[in-house]
Length: 290
Image (cartoon, rainbow, N blue to C red; front, side, top):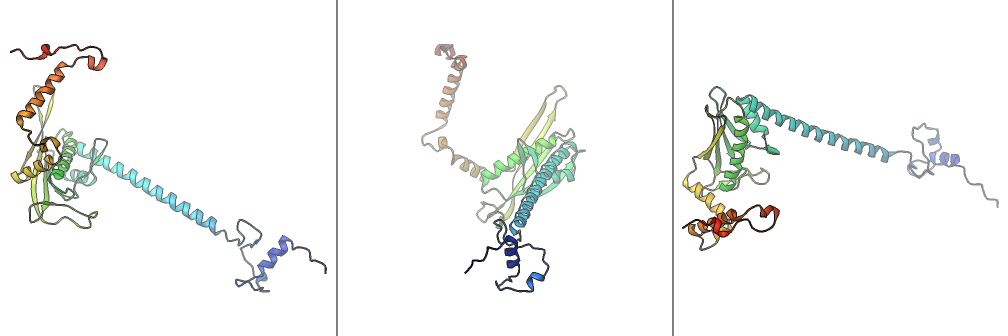
């Protein structure tokens, strides 16, 4: 029995074109016009659907779109923050101060953020005073509250006092306290907000003085409103991380003796500490005469 010659690629394509979805030959299927070319011998896409190419293009477009959106938001956010800082140093009014508190002000190599709950009490170039009140719900204790608020007050005051018409910046800080008088804060990314009674804790007052007899400009910081309980808790929290203060037996006399020893060591140092060589000073040269 003679063997039939193998089918040509065109015959194979025509044969598979007559198969329906169940694999049965449908004589009418070959007569239907279709935009899809079926090539079962193709290793790239035997069904002719090109689905993988379409998915790749869509995924690439989505990734590029997300990157463009993120980059655009970062540029807009940075420009907006710098405009807030520039507006605050050039023009001080309730709108510019409120905008600066919302977006943060430039400070150091970055920006300083402020609590989301705030009030602009005064912002007037005629009186030369800026006063704001904030409610801090991010700090977990008195020491964190004091540290964060001091940075925030310094950032706001520095940018505002760069305005020639502003001479004083008042930064009032409040927090929420529980029934035991301890500070509460937001938890779980703000899903559990701080609870308790709102209470004023302390106030930072930055004042700028300009002397007519000198070209110097003096800035002064005063911290008021801190009661004895808050001050004692801050001192206790500072001491808890200080090994020197926690060491038993250390008193003021010991600290004074240590400071005198450090001063004597500094006075003995000469250029040899940078250039090497023998010491330039003797102990007798720096000891006080009796």
